[in-house]
Every structure is written in C-alpha cells, then in structure tokens.
Amino acid sequence: MRTHSQPADGERTVVVTGSSGGVGRAVARGLARQGARVALLARGEAGLEAAAREVSALGGTPLPLPVDVADPATVEAAADEVERTLGPIDVWVNDAFTSVFAPLERLSAGEFARVTEVTYLGYVYGTMAALRRMRPRNRGAVVQVGSALAYRGIPLQSAYCGAKHAIQGFTESVRCELLHEGSQVHVTMVQLPAVNTPQFSWVRSRLPRHAQPVPPIYQPEVAAHAVLYAADHPHRREYWVGASTAATLIANAVAPGLLDRYLARTGYASQQTDQPRDPDQAAGNLVHPSDEDEDFGAHGDFDDRATSHSSQLWASQHHGAVAAALAAGALAVGLRRRASRR
Image 1 (cartoon, rainbow, N blue to C red):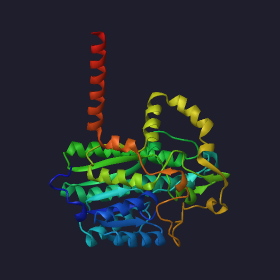
Image 2: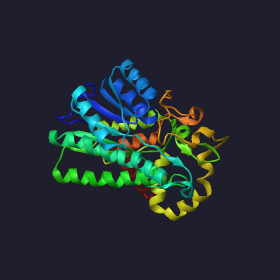
Image 3: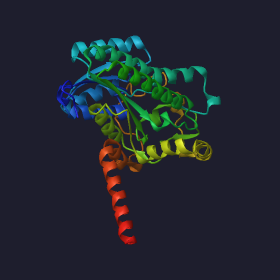
Image 4: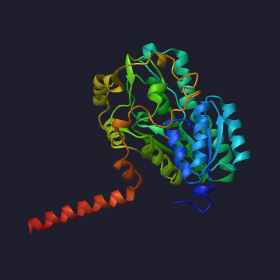
C-alpha cells in the first residue's frame, strides 16, 4: 500500500541498472506498462536502444543511458541526467551484474575484482546515488535484485556468490541506518531462483560445457513481477521468489554442512548442459558487453524448460493470508481431534 508521499505508477521515475537484457529488461517492460518514466542504465548499445523502443511502445517514457556501474562517477552523472530529464527518482532498481563460470583456481585476481566491482560495488554506487537524492526528500525506494546465492554459495561461481553475499550485508546495514533516522526511504531485496536469461551465454566461462541455470528454472517475467511488487511494497525487508529459493535458504539455515556435500556432488553437473561451450564465451561480457551490436532481449536459451509461475512468490507477498490459512488449518485440526476424543 502506497503512502501519501508516493507517486502513482504512471507518475514514477524509476532507474533500472542492467536493463538491456534479462531480468532488468523484463522489469523495464513491466514499468512501461504502468506508464512509468524509465531510466535504462546498461553497457550494451543495441540492447539499450531496443529496450528504449519497447518502453516507448508499451506506454512508458524511456531514457537510455550507457553506463558501466563499476564507475561511480558515471553512475552519479547518470543520476543527475535522470533527474534533469525525467524528474526526481522515486525508485532505483539495482540489477546489473557479471560473473565468471570457473573454479577459483582458474580465476585471475583481475577477473575476481571485475566481478566484484560490477556485481557488488555497482549496487553500492547505485544505492549511494539514489539515497543522496531520496533522503533529503524523505521518500523513495531502492530495490536490490538478489539471489538465493546471497545466502548459499555454490561451486564454480565464487566471485558472484561473494558479491551477492556482500550485497545482502550491505543492504542490511543501510536499512538499519535509515530506520535509525526514521527515514521514509526504504531499501528492500528480492532473492531470485535460477532464471532463464541470456547471461548463461554471455558471462565468461571456462566450463567444458554450456552453462545453465540450476533447475528448476523460472522465466524472467516471474522475477520482474517480484521486483515490481517490491518497488510498490518496499517496507518488507526482502522477498523470496520460487520454491527452490525458499527450500535452499531453509536447508542452508538448518543443515549447511549437508548442503556443502550435496553441492560438491551435484553442483558441477547441474550448472552445465550436455552441449559443448561456445569458444567465444571464453571472453564473455566481463569487460565488453555482449549486446553491443545485437539485442538479445530478456530470455535465454531455456524457454522449453522454464516456468512462468511461482506459488511461493504469492506466499512471500501475502504473509498475512498465509498465516491466517495456517492458523485456520491448525484450528480445524484441533477441533477434529477434540471431536474425535469426545
């Protein structure tokens, strides 16, 4: 439920980093359908231009800005341009990332640093730019697009997992500071499952076979729906998307050592298809964007295996209804037991 200080969907100015493809692209489409003013921040020129055309066609107002989020000065300049052109920023969605699929022993220090700069520090710089503008107005929301890997690391993605863990800790710290101030600016995080995005063809890989999301796989629109809901309801500290995310986080809290051994056995095979890796993926998008000259949209190669629905997401968004249903169920069981004793 919006407060009196929050603008309606069609009046909002929203920044989306990593919006040229994948989840960010799907989020931009959803915002456009609401009639929002959407600032599109990403590196790939072709992807950005295509995203801007889609936003316009779907009823939004686009502002494409080529930005590498690892450069704080560029992020700050982009925020200035957004407010000059579209108006005060109401929501900032951090989604841009990169990764390298490889065991740690095959990663260089420079590769690890680059993943950290984009995937973690990019969120830090985006959050800083957003809060510099939102805090004086005492309104606004920052949505961090996270992952189950913010809590549970898996093999072959040490740099990415480390960055997502860092985002989680950073976000908790900033949230506490805002609460201490009594601020009406909110920071929330959306923890995603495996999503069918182009990243599995984009990111640098040294795996022998083509990278894939760990099944079950969800379509990017499922993730986008969760992000849009979080932007409308940023008071909740975080949202979990997908039963696999909930199961992973619960299992990690209860039996992390057992999960270590399970992932040691299954984590290599589950992240690869049976097809050989494209030799071009040895470079990936770590330094240069993959959608510089060609637009890839929101979806990856796994449409035939991806689902477009998440019952768990509904439960995450409706804690009150779930609690009431559980209470009603418990009451019914108790009454039946009481009647049977009689």
